[in-house]
Length: 193
Image (cartoon, rainbow, N blue to C red; front, side, top):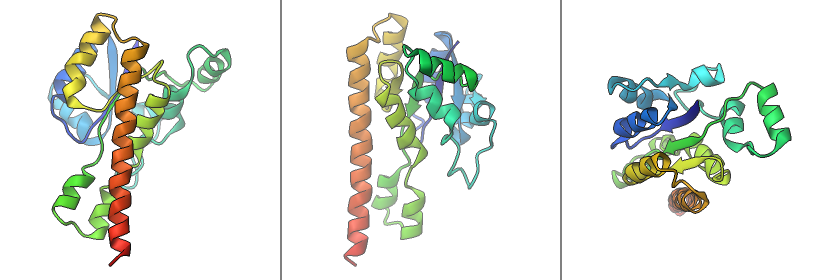
């Protein structure tokens, strides 16, 4: 069974997307508030701790930063040594990541203080996005709710080819680059005070 990891701040359309993935044969794994939203919406999602064997800790700061997540994302499906390692380590492949990032921009707009701004810096999200995008040949990376219908259609009709996957990876890296740039600029303004 294919596996999708869904962990989003912007929950627009995510329940319908996850239901669409389930209908296409995906097992849905999720975290925190997203897991609750999916279950409340009727999705049979499982919690990330069932994958990692480790609970979310530090107020949710650490939940997906784990070898059973990133190993499942980064291994090359056509590399026998990678496949052997994954099997030996009992790591399940993750075939799709749906992730958007903590709302640093919204905290910035409301003029949050430094401690709140720091809490709005996403670490696990960009890490998952980058891992999935690096292995785009084998892993679909979805970072925009507006792309949900197109992704479901592409999977259903077997149009999720190399070019389609690379386009999603391009969008993913553009998102993480813009996110890091926004944070960098914020820290620069704090140094100037």
